[in-house]
Image 1 (tube, one colour):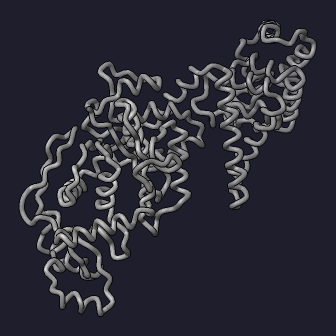
Image 2: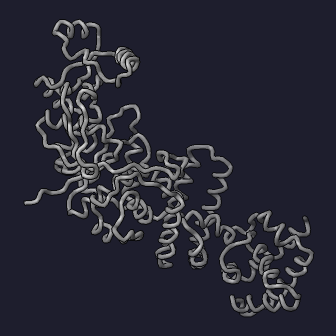
Image 3: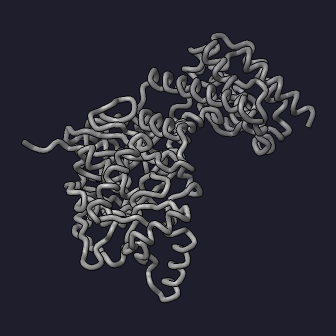
Length: 512
């Protein structure tokens, strides 16, 4: 019988789930779903200084939003819990004690200062800093003296002093590491919490993990983990170390590349599946370089063998483009529902922010925009649907609507200064707008066709180009030089509002 595939995603709750972590979670999820296996979520929260419960919750919220469900873990349960490492301390202590009893590990009483001095001496000799084995051969008397001084021991694993440890990696093949370059490493800290490598091995073994898929920045940890598997008589899993994600400049991905947390992309109005689709293409591809995938199609086509060996390049503009393409593919009902949910979510988040901190002026104005739009959405859902239909071809994220379509709901919008200079500061414009107003008032019915016909006839009557008529009218109605179809947006605004905005523009021009 074929062994069940069991993979895990194990974030540390010391910050928000970032793009690199989300891609690792995605590759694990795709591999599990493709093989009808299990994805285990484990929270590695043993860093008592930096771990925060809110980061654990945020990571799980982000995974749920992306649609990356797990089969065992927090909120799901399972046969191999607990799934928070902070609840498994007695397990780690038990196995660390076992290694000490078997003479495969030992107590280390070295202070931080002593370790730093040892490393300094090694660097002075151009040697790679590593533990010098000082406590490896302590006598019972020496141990007793150190404990009388109040020193609390950590536990170090005895690394073989000679030989090679091999890592069999699916992407890189066999990678060798000289044991003598590792040094004896800590498995249990003096505060009785486990070191990263030790907790990983214990948990992966006891949770029956068959394949570890993680970033290649963990490759150097793997030989230590393989030595621990052997010492504990556990069978080590298959390893797949996926390439890192870099910015377009070739540097490690960071906030300056516009690469932030998953939650920030959610706040910016990205669609969850668009982000998933883009993340899947960071280091993985199909033979025909397909770019857009449905969920089941991506699961079916995914394989570890198609992951590249080179670092993936994160391009925020391509992600934005892809999100825009997904928006254009949505039917109007789904798009409107998605926009409404986004508006509700961001409004709730902004209200929470406003009660906890003093908001900057820009943040306050942004909140006012959202509140105003949400109010209009609730009062006039049909109008908002029309607005979204007009903006669907232009926006790339939901948050773009605040900027692109705010003029629909803000009756006292600011005029763009460049638009005023270029389109309105013409001698003929006040007279033109007054004539447009007169003719609009007489229009019946008030429709796209009658509006356009009126504007074209007016251009002939005034011996103007259509642009000389259309452009001032657009700025008068929107404050901008660009936007959705002029006559379409005018109909959405309605005759009464169009007349009011023309009057407002005329008043503004009189005061220039």
